[in-house]
Image (cartoon, rainbow, N blue to C red; front, side, top):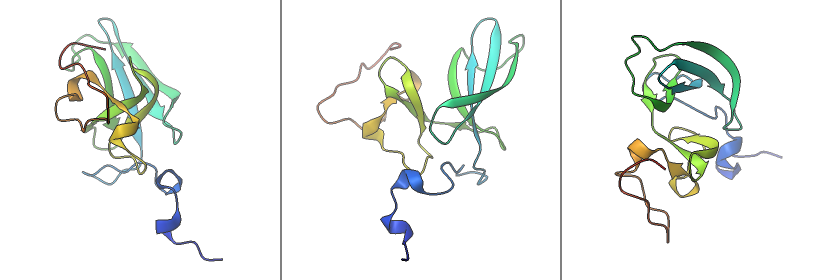
Length: 127
């Protein structure tokens, strides 16, 4: 039996992620607070997997918060969460199975995020 890519669920396609800038299929998740920056690999199941690094934030140029970045070119990638209040899995917009209606945008991406049917997102402030 021959299976055409068009017949596959988008989440079953390889690679799961692909950077539109450099083509890398590895994304990382970065969390920065007042004291530390911690980095994890983003797994194919949209969960943070192996912790890569944790270091003091002295001199770190990003604001506090969550980021998804390309592991190769370090470009920031927009993303949403599978549950409100920054809960659940992470859904980068450059994932093969990305659907904006199935994710809640990270706060800084709310402006311009495609609306979910019947749901109004807060226009400012954090979740």
